[in-house]
Length: 185
Image (cartoon, rainbow, N blue to C red; front, top):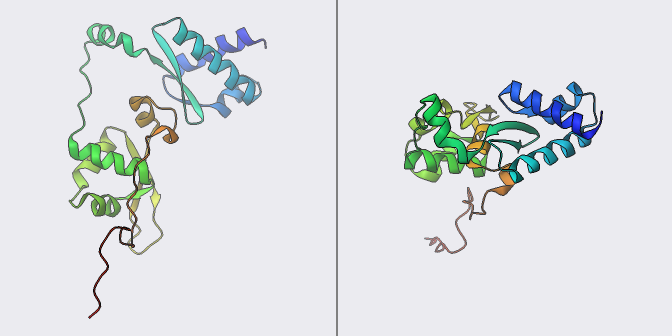
């Protein structure tokens, strides 16, 4: 299959899917090498962005998804009469940030960093599909671990977690370097 035909096939599959498709699945479906499919998809994404088309192709982790251009949001909203998704509250944004940087993270870890109960925020983020369960921690009580979803990447306009800005991480179990030494008595 030549590059142009491969790009047309990628475009059709991503349009029909309406969600992220893993690169390996695309390569299998198109009977092509994964590197060749990735190159064709990246080239198609670049062309759509350069031409300022109404659609875009985003690379999300190890897959691709077709989305509408952010520039067209007002037209889409008007045409489909949809409401904008609700904004994240400060507590939800804090919780999401902790999970994004420390994932997989438990509710207890989030609460230890935030210093307050975070059950509502975690529940809201699950409902908004920004986080998902990522198994259970192998400790007594087997708490649920959470991680971000591909929707998180898409909504925040990043292709992988490595694009998150650096932060000063909280260390667990050790006092910070600038903390006063405990007195012995």
